[in-house]
Image (cartoon, rainbow, N blue to C red):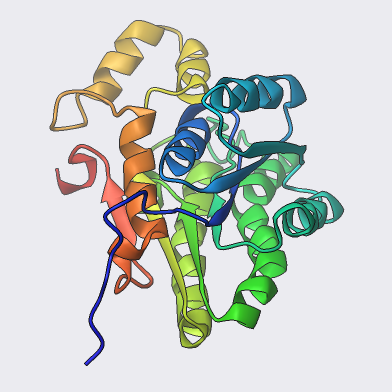
Length: 262
């Protein structure tokens, strides 16, 4: 019987990790935690200025992190992100598909462009990045893919039809990918965060007629009595990305302060 050995040092030492949407919010926290744990990190995101700022803030600690400007809805740019990551660092061990957008609109009021942008950014991007990263993992028969879904991929929320559909799709896509690639030693899982204090959530509530009241009502939907912090989600992603979760395959790990159990 093979004995499981998990390093007592940094849990991602020597690993190369690609994080989409890694320049703010949850994605930035994931990049920071990965670097803390010894990984070489590549961030792919659209906002070049914010990406440069993120990289500089982490590099000050002497760590290896790179930003590659990437629109995750564009096939050629996603392929470039993966190709450049391999060119720079020789391989990809971890892929975290985190990029996402939130458009709050009832179904009838949602335009086709808004629907497509949500699905393409949140769901199609997972397909694209995984499609280009998986061959590198298959060749060495090792890898971990962690996709960021949402508690709203498990339960509905009025006014979020496109977002909920995209996040539910991530959960099922993750499970199918897990089935297809476990035989190559590749583990695919996802996390389902609840409300998290990020710029995206802040901007969403600013559009409400009474932002403070709406945020308070949303916060109360979390039995723990608050919304989450980005680093709390990042620690869950770290668990799934590392060998500490070596027997976890196809899981949708809910990190939501109790939102879905009400």
